[in-house]
Image 1 (cartoon, rainbow, N blue to C red):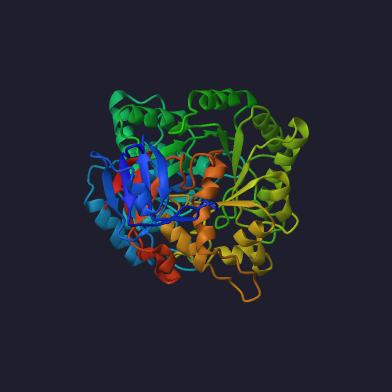
Image 2 (image 1 turned 90 degrees about the horizontal axis):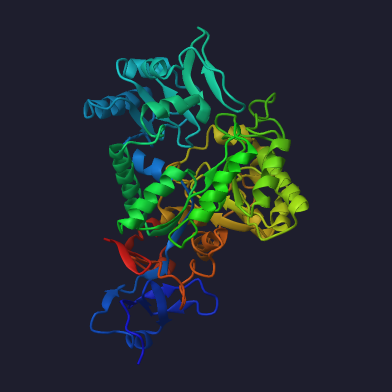
Length: 544
């Protein structure tokens, strides 16, 4: 007598992502695992009196999406912020900010997200004076889509103690005006960190019980947002113990809707002995729902603010290659130390100079500690050199990339980014296909809230990717390659390819039922295919 299933999904077009059995019609789930995946008649043998049956109505069923690079807490907190994507021109910005402020009279700091570097015009950069004209009497701060630049009005700068500048570490800058005061533009985390602290996003000292409950509610909202988009696993790059503790409390309450990995964030002012905390987090959290085992690092910034580190100078700033957050030797010492502990590394590296320095660190770690299956990662890789492309496969390094990021994709403006990079580097910019063809494992993600969280939009962006010039190589992915980037490769990136990323008997029951046949949908219409039911660990975590 076949085992009785808790849940059966039938009448489906299942894309298993399993090369041994690529398609199926139905699946049976019991105790959080898949116990059968086959034709409908075979699976229905597992139907018992208490079995719940979900009719997929011939829609596609795919493995649950694995979001391999996102910021869960920040993204959830920002759901209530003013969203400026698509806003252009001073008048439109003024109207949006004043309307938002009028509805929130009690907020201590008003925050906005998604302000393009060219929100005023292609040539005029935002200053505190612009923002003062909009909102002179309340602290206001807005962030660029990449979250590496913020602009603040005078009131916010005064409250944060930044109006007269401040000494900062490498790679960070408070842009000063001709009057000797801050212009309002703040580049990288040290510069705008005091503004974030004003808004209450970083709990230090330890939160009170009321603050802990508030943070837990924010985290729950983020998990619900992920489940709504078909996400069942998150590699959360925020990187702190507080968030792991929040998630652990939510798990105890039975409310954990996604599996979450949280790294330890190592910053350039830390000392190597502080990696003990990373090892402790890895030991404490090593389950299939909550885990750590990774060290997150920033090596550079972003292209649009000239804080990404380049091998050759910026095309529009020929005297500047950017300033790294670590010296090459500091990073090598860090990589060797992290690797010696058996931990994985994930390093934000956008410029080709940063990518090279990080690969050098990983190579040094292999020489010092011996080669192992470390699966160290390079995050973003927006520009790479031809010489460094084959090093990913040679070193076994994962290329963690984001289909929504290239200028021209998903509403991202071409300028100023393409002019910063320059035509000579365009062929090796956001070079997913080039890296994949060279043997690299390429994993996809959104970097939410930098980009919209929706994996289906990311898949569409990967499929529709177009070169900036006719002479540039095609970097697009096929539909199945893009799906693998959000499933199979995500599982591989966290050493879980034996349990998830595919739909097969014995694997975790993490899946999403879609509203239509994703394979029969034109690439231009992929965004119309929506998650109807998300299942994680055999539990329905979202239903439309």
